[in-house]
Length: 135
Ligand SMILES: [Zn+2]
Image 1 (cartoon, rainbow, N blue to C red):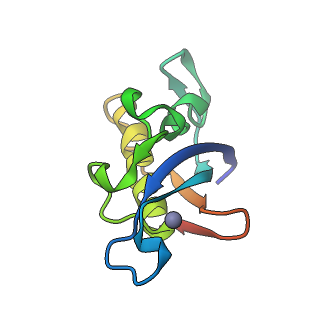
Image 2 (cartoon, helix red, strand yellow; image 1 turned 180 degrees about the horizontal axis):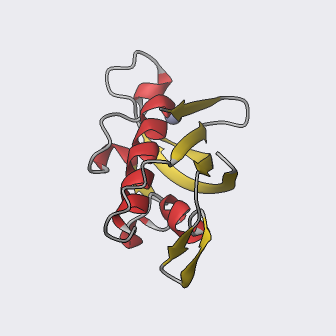
Image 3 (cartoon, rainbow, N blue to C red; image 1 turned 120 degrees about the horizontal axis):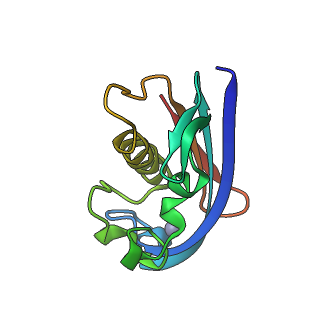
């Protein structure tokens, strides 16, 4: 893949890990840090640029940074997030992977499936601990 975009952002959210025997089972919050790396074989237009000159628009990649009321995850209770099966760092990374690819592919022109996209999502729950997910 000749191109790799990377972007990082933060969002604040609350969660509890259901059935966890310990403090993570109680409601608490994190300042999550997220890194998205998107590789692609070709350049494409975006919603803001009609010519095929981008892997993807950074705005599209950074959707989760937005407030809950604008469709992101900031200041969300993650246990109430539709489509998120659980709230471990592993499950958040896998959810961000699937949802980001869905959003990227839904914006592509007809006939372009986005099958060359390779996305890696890393989620830091604390400064010291993170989980990466890719396929
Ligand atoms: Zn936690």
